[in-house]
Image (tube, rainbow, N blue to C red; front, side, top):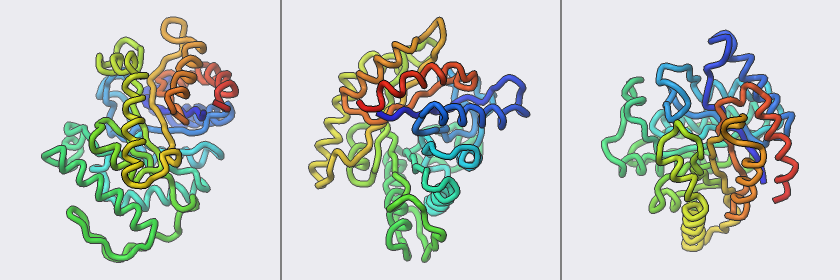
Length: 308
């Protein structure tokens, strides 16, 4: 099992002038400890949900990943996950390709349909009027990524038209950066994973107070619900002739290691449970990772779960 880290929080001691140095130290420490991946949220301001106020600091995702590519050497890098509606898909593919080239083949394209209307409107971005359009636009973006990373040429879709895009230099990852699709719904999104995804991300939730009730309920019922979702994905793979084992199963869990909340043993137990369900890669969302000691504690778990 691989262990990854998501950094959702940039309100560091020292204020704005300390962000770059603190983020770099967090990423370098995680890499030294054996974390396999490093992720950032694709938001323009803090989303709350237990991580702080809307007015708290938030960095733009792809600029941040470019910076992280320069201060790390081994970890994979990606968004957890890109809001599809925030960028033209042709431009997004170019951005992820650039990240892959500059990181020497360490980029993921993490992507989801998008959900945060308030955030889009705050920054002047159009937000689709229906869930079906959100899914339609995501589906077309996945087709465009495959098209640009494949044969190229013109593309005519329902929402976007591309005229002979040139994607040079090509990505270093072969055949392209892995496409990770973040899923909430079961009926449609898991079908997209079976057809277009190299990886899936499912939300595990959290046992922590201060987060939404739905996140704690999801954590409490994780074995039942995550098993069901992976079973649905397996069935979808069978229907389209896809090898289920070729899709990386990743999960995102919000944890907090300190004397009042969770221990190293709690994290270890969670890893073993998720491995039994069928996950390959667990990403921990940690608001206190920048303190570094919690990272070191998780680092002690990595050797024990590596061969699960």
